[in-house]
Image 1 (tube, rainbow, N blue to C red):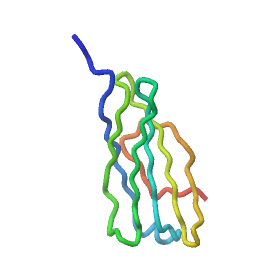
Image 2: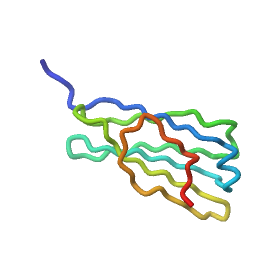
Image 3: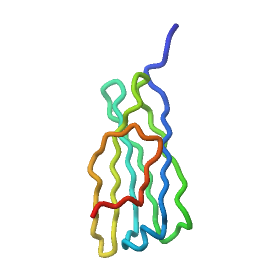
Image 4: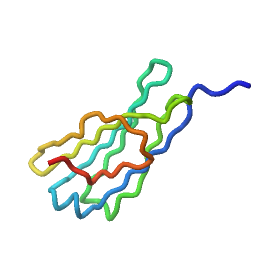
Length: 103
């Protein structure tokens, strides 16, 4: 039987708005990365914290059928246009908590 070389993977994005506001976060950008057939795929979603009541969202990314791994990077833009980044992290998680800000 033939099988597809890739599959769609959904990753939930959640976090506490008040936690982000308390840390002076104005914008959160989440990027998911995967490599399928030697080609890197990137999916991006941004959250303007002042416009949100809650964060309960998801991103979908194509990954190879024989894995559940992907990479992600979260960037937080703080007041004064300062930015913090998680760096590119390997994960198998079904959910990312975008209010977990590095110190």
